[in-house]
View 1 (cartoon, helix red, strand yellow):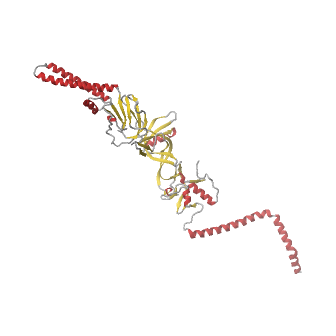
View 2 (cartoon, one colour):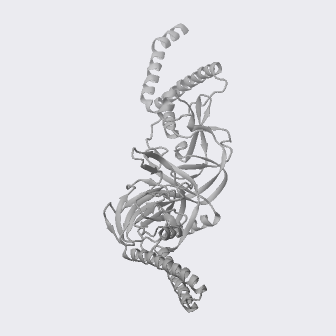
View 3 (tube, rainbow, N blue to C red):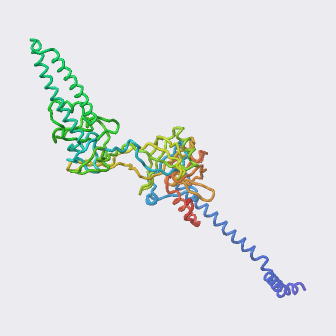
Length: 484
């Protein structure tokens, strides 16, 4: 009986049970198929990750004693470094330094009032007979600029009267000598001799007055003595380039001929003057007081800053503390700095139209081109020129012991800021606390993320951040790390 039952179960019951189970599984597949698929996929991925980690660990142990996190470490080829401009100039150890937080003020280079520009005019009426310098030429103080043939009626008359008085005085002196000899013999009364002495005193007094009059016309003692000795009138006036720091009587020279005479102080050390504007030409008739030319001294200039009303107190405080100012010039190659410029003075009134406070900063100038031509003329080009526009960085706050880097040394992703520290042939991304940022520099908190002596890439941080994201397979935001 049992064999028959066993045969029945094998032939009919088990196939029926299998069919029932299959039908139940198909009917309830929505309940168990998705969890089972997820479990199988997770198991496969976990096994693959373990294998990859074991393989990577084996490679690193053979090639690098100090493994890098590939998600935050980057190796650049020499070509890539050159492409982002990461030269040795931008791979330097960082050091702690003091930083002055500044405000940017628009400014313009101006001349120093009463010092930079010199007006050369003629003291007497005449005709220009020679112009020795051309417009744009550089001349030293004491250089002969103009020769003028005098037609000034008052000077000619004063010289004529002076020479005439000299002649009359000579006659009276000779007559007195003759009468004194006769008076000793008693042939002439003493009263006649006394009258001649009075006449000589009068002529001497008149001669002294005429001498002073000639001085007022510009003649020196030497030139007056020359007229007295030669008894001839001075016909020509020579005008020399004056000095910016002193006034000399020999800025003008009168001569009796056309012979050129040089001023005595040409050999003194002095900055060259540039003949900015020439107002006369040869043969031109000029009157006393007419302008002949304008000379400019560009060795020392001012930078005039225009502080807005909200910044006026900060500028005043910076000047009071004796802080220096940085001038920022924009060029085709970027910004060029001129640092450690001192305050000259602050204006005592606010401009009614612009509502700005003017302040002035000293700007030493330098010559960038000094050339001469075959005619012996000298031409200069100065580094800074009046009218040139720039920005002034005026410090308003000072921080001690900070890391200061160029703005291109930092990149941003979300709330994080990073720099790239050189570690052998690789660059490791290091998170930092950004304390301050402006258009040119960033200040990084000295909180232990970096240490003095660490070598940090001072440019190209944004490009390296994009390279890391590309390597990890993440989408690249072309504007990440940039502020607009």
